[in-house]
Length: 250
Image: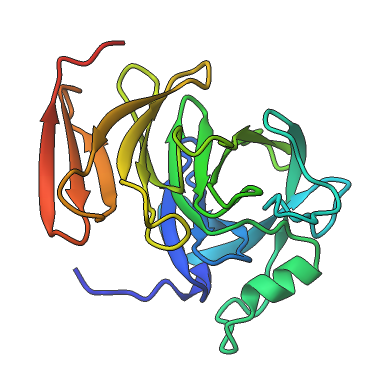
C-alpha cells in the first residue's frame, strides 16, 4: 500500500493513539512534560487525511494545569470529574514545534507526559507518566458523550502516592476480565526502582502481575491473545517479547 503522510494529525511528539469505534475519532497523547491531549475528527470515517485536529479544554477552567505538581494553583483530587470540550487547532503542521504552546494559550489543558491510551467499556484510559506531586504518574479516564453538542467527562482516575503501588505508568491495555494492565517506565524520575507490570481492578485496587528481575528495562506493548489466555509484553531495552500465560482470575 502506498505510504500517505497524515499531516492533518499535526506535528508534535506523538506517543499513542486509540480510536472510538462508534465515531471513528482518533485520540492521541503527547509525550512531553507540558503536552496536550488531542483528538482527530475525520471528515469521513477511517479517512485520516482530511479532518480537524482538536485539543481538550476543561469547561470553566481555561488553560488548566492537570499535572498536580507542587505549587499548582488549583490541584485536582483523585476521583474528581470535570466537564471537557475541544478547541480546533490551527497551523497543525507547526514548523516551530509550538502546537502545544499555542493550544495551552488558547485554553487547552496541560498534561504531564501523556503516553499509553486504551479504549474499553465506552471510555479512554490515559497514562500520564510524570503526573502528580511526586511525579509518580496519573491515570485519567475520558468518557466521550458521543454528541458534538454535549460535553465529555474527564476524571482523574488514579494518582498513586505510595511508591510501592504504581510508579510512572506508561503503556496500558484492558484485561479480558475488565481490569487495566499497566507497564511501568522508570527511566527518568524513579530509575532506582524495579519495573513492574501492575493490574488495577474496577475498585481502583493495584496488584502485581510481573517484575523485571533481569535489568531496568521497561515493559511495553502489552496486549492479550484473542482468547484472553496469554498476555504478550515487550522488554524494551532487552529486545525481548514475553508470553505470560494464565490461568487468570477474574
